[in-house]
Length: 198
Image (cartoon, rainbow, N blue to C red; front, side, top):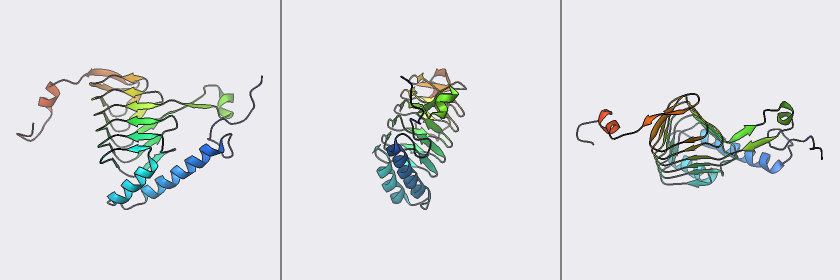
């Protein structure tokens, strides 16, 4: 049977599923409100963030500006921190563990478009979830692609493009992102800190 020549996502106005388009417009409204609050209005930011995200743990901070597609597909654990200009295209779901730090200008996108040009014109699109473990630090300008899983206690280097599975307890970086080395006890002793704090 021939596939109908209609968009299957919400990329175009008047698309096949208007509910998605409506939900995206609502999320953009909340993001706009969030981004236009005074930068020191912690209570106001927290209120909107808890309305926007599907789940928010204790002491979550997202520094404006911030944009997402739906919001309710995002789950953030305790002590979540995202710096300026983080974008989350969350159609497939994005889940963060506890103590996740995200540096400025990071993109997390669950969307994938078809390679075939006609399929793209028809609006065919899939979304795959992103899962980030506990105690993960994602460096500035990193791009986290659809279907990625990052294990606990891992650091993603600045500017990396991450696709697939990154294990726990490693430093990974590059385009494409690859494991460089494990994080060891030596890293605690080589990092500069004030005497007596560790």
